[in-house]
Length: 297
Image 1 (cartoon, rainbow, N blue to C red):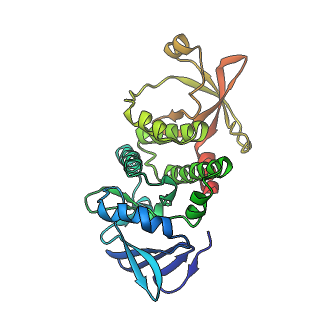
Image 2 (tube, rainbow, N blue to C red):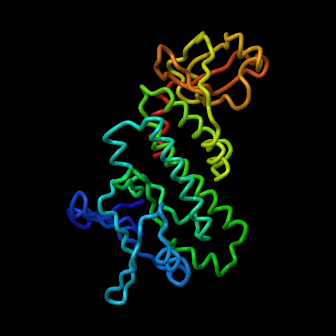
Image 3 (cartoon, one colour):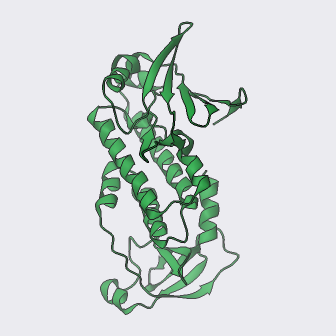
């Protein structure tokens, strides 16, 4: 998205104008071309009900132009926190849990999840440590409602939400505390599921509710391929753990993305298994994964 700098502290990002007059006195403005449905239905819902997971919004009218003012006073963007400190497993869990609560509120009040801003610079943490999200109407919302949402248009919206969710989680991965192996496993497994199965509220709830016991299995790195950066086959691995071999026979579906820990350090993740020998597979180096995450951004 093109960013146009208007002043020392003002940036225009198409639909959102972000102003930061002072560290703890900030506002966000959103301007839109389609207002009828939002103002007649959704704005009334937001105004009359205090949704805990959403940043409060007020309508401002000036010179016959309408804009939304989001009060983010005292709130800090998630992106700033990622620059200041690495995310622990507890913090990763908190973000996912809050996302789950936000989606539930959106459904309870019959709002549109596609209108949630998912870029980390527009996701905020308040003084109590709670995450809040910005909800604003999309320019195409009114026209889509009038056309009763054709199947193809609905599919496009879902695909856009999937891409934006992937981009958010891809941004989170480099922010993880890589000294915290629990955080690494927690987020990489979830990101892998989102990419393979597609994001959904059900997937999110299941992942959060599943109590994961830490289980480590022994493997042997038999060979490394330093120059292979294309097909995520950086190392050849062999399962040597007797317990895992008895239970599964080796690498099975669902293990893709499992972190590889060496001497207490995250060094990569499982990516492939040999069809004719499930005890042998491939893994990708951690540094290649990080480079891929930055390319997604």
